[in-house]
Length: 132
Image (cartoon, rainbow, N blue to C red; front, side, top):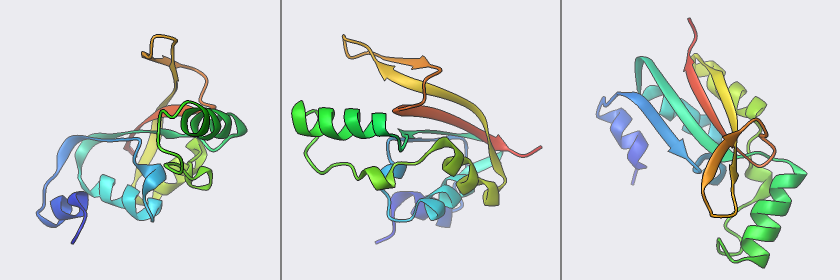
């Protein structure tokens, strides 16, 4: 059975904005996944991706703290080797004609609310648009 995104591409569906939040670090083939997201985006549209950066800080917070110590996610949910750096994400979208136009870090405050920051060491949000 095809994934939902691939099914939508096969049906010719296209959208002004495509959002993939905390998904790419779980897929088997991230390059193909990026191609699929691009194929779902109308000309002139944009793609927003949130994910975990592959850094020592992301390992400490997402895996050691969130999974193993605090139980915020089941143990084994994340594979640090599959985390994607902003540079890698940019390169994955280049063949589809999309480039990184905005990048922001994401941090959670003590109340559990997410905030955008300039620090992309753990989580980040990327906004991609088609090359001009």
